[in-house]
Length: 105
Image 1: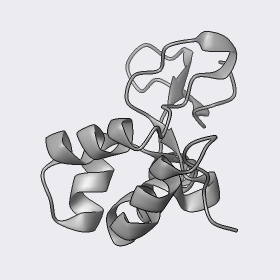
Image 2: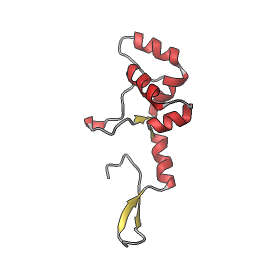
Image 3: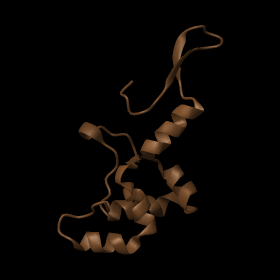
Image 4: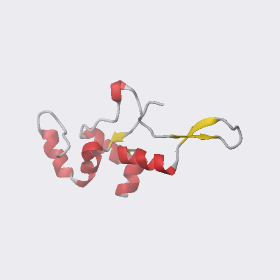
């Protein structure tokens, strides 16, 4: 609908109407673009609650184009969520730097 979540239009088996479904390929494409609390927890073998708190404390913003609320989604571009858990020293340096958190290049 809005282009952020891939979906495949298919005929519903019972209703025989065209509907959007999320296929395995759609889900894989979504997870290549976005990090959810659950995918973070599964990737790093940690609980999602402290992980999202760490991201919030580091100033890593959630995905929110035009101020729209999509919940606790983080864009994977720049690998900022990865860095938040793999490079804690990097975050400490960035938090002490004027301008805040910036993903590494």
